[in-house]
Image (cartoon, rainbow over all chains, first blue to last red; front, top):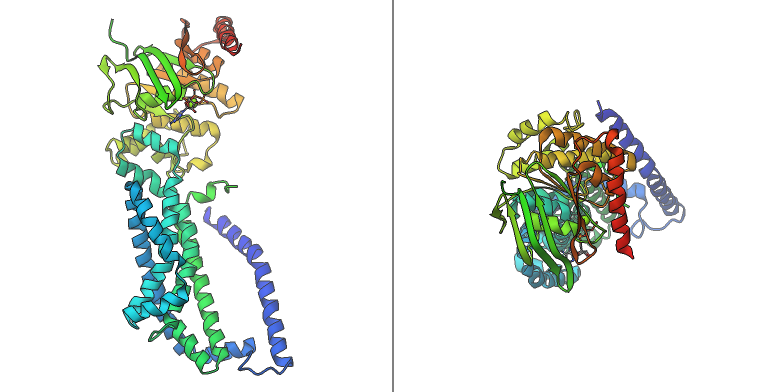
Amino acid sequence: MPIRPTFMRDVARLISHAGPAVLSVSALVLVWEAYARVSGISPTALPAPSRVLVQGFEQRDVLASHTLATLQATLFGFSCSLCAAFLFSVLVDFFRPLRRALFPVFIITQTLPLVAIAPLIVLWFGFGLTPKIVLVALVTFFPMLVALVQGYDSTDRDIEALMASMGASRRRIFVAARLPSALPYFFAGLRISITYAVVGAIFAEYAGAVRGLGIYILNAKNNFRPDLVLSAVFVSATLTLCLFGATVLVQRAAMPWARFEEPKP
Amino acid sequence: MSAPRLELKAVSKRFGDLEVLADINISVRPGEFVSILGPSGAGKSTILQLLTGALSRDGGAMACDGVPLDGNSHRFAFMPQRDALMPWRRVIDNTALGLEVQGMSRSAARAVVQPLFAEFGLAGFERNYPAQLSGGMRQRAALLRTVVQESSMLLLDEPFGALDALTRARMQRWLSGMWTRHGWTVLLITHDVREAVLLSDRIYVLSPRPARILRHYEIPLPHPRTPANSHALAEVEADILQTLLNLEE
Ligand SMILES: Nc1ncnc2c1ncn2[C@@H]1O[C@H](COP(=O)(O)OP(=O)(O)OP(=O)(O)O)[C@@H](O)[C@H]1O
Ligand SMILES: [Mg+2]
């Protein structure tokens, strides 16, 4: 079976890629642990990593429920954002002048500082899921839209001319040529945006929420529990990495031809 | 005598200030293999784009089987200068693209192209992706995609331009054999004089931009051309080469 050798190669590549990073992170954690123990610094200022781990583990049920809330907001918000970005990308692709009308508005949304906008959105939409979804969509919509539009424009002109010579309609050309051409751009945008999405959700929660890692972090900070703050940070980092990994897997599955192509310079 | 399959009369085309085609007169009879030779940038690809409807002409007339070509009423099977295979489609689905666009279901289109894979030297590669093919195989796949459209005429834009010399020579022989067997009507664009001489019944030589027909050659030798013809072919080739070189002065 061809699956096994590629799988083994992937594992080997993962080890060779991730090895140095694992080493440097481990070294950092060790130095931190040593410093926290030897210097006698108060754990309310700088908790040792071991303490972060233990405290976080003790709080695992609470942490898990908050994490679930954040994950839910991230996925909901990101899905809404993806749908909207796709719809607008199609609209803009078929009606070019719209691009010039809409893009400036979208660019302005990208210049808004999150710290200022998050409390306002909570004010407008309450403490539930809605403000989180709105904020996640706000930070991820435009990058995804740009990725898609750029992807459509990357379509090989010869392929479009060929399809036109076959009598294909505009819609047909879009579906059969422009859409698949945009996939690499789409996934590049997806990988970046999914990390923004988690940050966006946590920001919204930090500005006010019933549940979620953001509000957990805020409470832990107010209770002078930096160990719990760091536990939550650790969880959110892990969450982001998992989501990132998931997009890579989805891309593999969605673009089976890509592994045969020579890497672009 | 019946109307020519394709007839271009005094066709002209300009891009803004750039006059590309000045006065193009070409005719192709059914079953004929006709080549257009010309310097790079002369407007050879532009002629094909006029025929596929990607561009519209500024003057002159074009007709297919005596029927004027206007709008997008007529479809020729077109093979672009680069193979334009879709990287995301398997080879079989790339070759079936034209049939699918014509409204055939994917499985029906596959069933039409499948039996031709062996003849095109692609047997066993149906389920592969284009990135897994060699340059020569890609060109054959692109050609297969072109011929299955069952169009009245094939328009080939430098099909072998990107290949190495050996593969190109092989592909030329192969195409010559295929053409003899299938009786296609072909209009071939090339700037390889030897290729044109080897494959064509007739050759039009274009002048540099703004292009007009500079010379017209008939090569009344049987196909596929054998080493026995090589002397006669070499003479025509030398003549055309001289014509093209004289242009530079
Ligand atoms: N869409 C276009 N808009 C403006 N100029 C164009 C366009 N298409 C072609 N041209 C110009 O027309 C001229 C002829 O182009 P064309 O592609 O037909 O040349 P060609 O004979 O096929 O050349 P080559 O042998 O290099 O393929 C070139 O100078 C090119 O820059
Ligand atoms: Mg050309």
